[in-house]
Image (cartoon, rainbow over the protein chains, first blue to last red):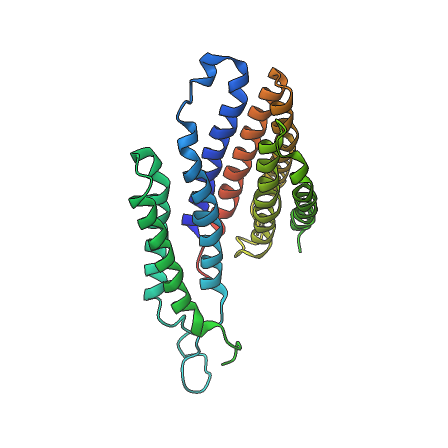
Length: 144
Length: 136
């Protein structure tokens, strides 16, 4: 969730720079050339907000709020709290998703338009699959 | 549901309808100077006006609360986020196509102001919700 919020702040910051560049272009060449490489930031702006913020927020909320697994045995005040099951795939999804977002985001700045973005998108794909693996058994009736 | 959440959610629904209306009109803008900016406005009405704003409103309502005295943090900050986000987005929706159709310094400054307003709104939201991201 905090990573999603950081991507929201970063994504809006890049969006503001892009919008400023569009506005400043009217005010004269001196200002227009102040941010000549701003359009290289567009993929990062899109990736941070669509995947780093929106998708990651959805994953974070799902991890928090999907039904958990009650400990076997009768309910009692001393029973362990319900578990979220196997959280290793969810952690893998977190690492892969954020790694993928940054690979796609920095690729234009490094002049790489094929290998790094492809690797980033594949990392995001594996992240989605890993998260689905974690969340799938938790999509169930609350009491099950 | 807190009042601020109702503002966020209802406004987000208005943006959803407005964005889809604009989307329906986009084919008529192809080839005009404002065509590409209108496409950008359409996309941002959906992604910022609807999705982000809906998330802001629901998060303000549903995230774990803080101390009883101020369970949802600063109300003034929440209202500021709402105003900055919407004034910024509306200013952009008007200024960006106008900027392309008939360039003028006034539109440039409006775009700059809209960029600043939306940026501050995002930072304000992060600041307001950050302390509420905690174990529950």
